[in-house]
Structure formats: C-alpha cells, structure tokens
Length: 341
Ligand SMILES: [Zn+2]
Image (tube, rainbow, N blue to C red; front, side, top):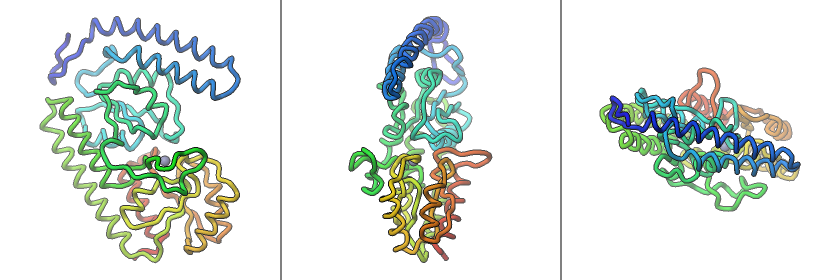
C-alpha cells in the first residue's frame, strides 16, 4: 500500500503484478475472440464479438490499478471532447485527462481499441455520457463508483420526432447537452463536486476553478441570449439533430436534415420535405458540420437557392480551437444566417 503525497492511497506494487498477469490473460482472450470473429462473415457478428471481448476485459480488470498510474494526479478518462474540456477546466492541474475519442472522429460512431478499454478500467474516474456512445457504455459496464455520467446530471429532453430515423425509439433522449451553456455548467458543477470528493487534498483548488468556469459560461449564455434576441428568422436547418438544446434555450427552431447520427443516409423523400420546409421558412443558410460531408446540406441549399455555413456541434475539435472558441464562432454564424441585429 502506498499513500501518496496528496493523501490518496493505492495498492501499487502487489496490484501491478497481479494486474499484468490479468491483462496478459485478457489480451490473449481478446486475440482469440477477435481472430474467431473474423472467420464469421457478417459485420454484425464482428461487432458483437468485439463487444464480447470488451466485456471480458472490462470485467477482468475491474479492480486493481495500472502500474503506470500517476500518483500526483487524478487519472480521468473522458469519453469525448466536451467532457474532456470540462474535466480539464474544473480539474486543472489536479487531474490528468485522457480522451477516448481522437480529434476528427465522430463520437457517435467511434470504436474502442482494447488498449482504450484497459485505460477505462484503470481510470480513477470515467467521465462519459450514457446513451451517446454504445461502445463506451459497454466498456464501462457496471464499474459504478468510478463513473461520472453527464446524462444523469441534467434534465434531458427527447429528440424531436423528425430527428428520429431508422430505428431510433420515439422519446429517446437528445444527448447534445453541452451545446446548452446552462446545462454544460450544471454538469461542470456536479463534476467539480465529484472530483472534490475523490481528491479531498485538492479541496481548495476545485472551487476556484469552478468559479472561473462559471463566470465564462454565464458570459457565454448572456452573449447567446442578447445576440439571438432580435433576429429576422428563427429556424435553423442543420445536418444532424445536434442543436435541440441550444435551439430550445434561445428560442430557435431546429430543422434537422438527418437524424441523430451524423453520417446517416437521408432518403430522397426526406430531402424533398426538408427543402420544402426550409423554403417555407425562407431559410437563407443550410448548416453543416466540421466532421461530416457537406453533400446533403449542399443539395438542399442548391434546391432552394440558399448558401451553406458550418455550425459545429463540438463533438470533436481540431487545431487551436476549444469549446469556448467554437461556441462563440457558432454564435457569430447564427447571427449572420438568421439576420440578427
Ligand atoms: Zn451528435
């Protein structure tokens, strides 16, 4: 047992030996299962075999700590960018955050590598959002007290009926809570409280970080409120149904071209419907997003003589962008497209 400087203790030496054996065994199991699965033809069989492998590793490694654990920091695994940003902002130098979704990858569709499943099982806190990424939901399984579920921190609203395509269930919750600054702040507040409980030695630094984050989120919320208060139009035609919370918060109406999943196929009938709706609302801009092909948005825009612009759902960022930069850019884009004063 090692008691670290910041008061957190862990079973490191004994634990790491047992754990490497465990990991070796589990890796072998995975190799066998995956090798086996590639002899089965249908892709669905491969997916379920991978999930089975993940379940094996998740249960095998649910206890113990990895040998490379950093004793100076809370080891946080975040499922995708907005949760990574949140953990870094409210955690600061008390935490070390790993993001499971690489930049440029669409989080709804992401896959987990076996090494990432090991990361998940070794994390002191997994910050994820149940219902958004099936592979992550599967990997975290029931490792209950190490989980922080963002979806449980705020009230969710159901996806708009027109956003439900291809098998999504009516009443399924909209996962895009981070696009509402007020909900995002609530999730950040709950996360800060959780980190304070997990890392009592940092109890003096978490509140200050949360206060700084709160100031920025309140300013962002105010900028949206005033920036979208007087606009010629209020309908936003978007390439996937990511902006429901934002629309509801600031009095806009979202008209999604595709459903929840960003690369979902759009039927010609649905395209015609969207073009008609966009035309009837005199939409001048069809929005598409950074991680997805603009083809469908361009088709609708051409059809009704509109232009296209990027409205970013911040499911991943690239370059020097961060959450606040992209939210501010989205606001400028919306103000221009909707003719706001
Ligand atoms: Zn999305």
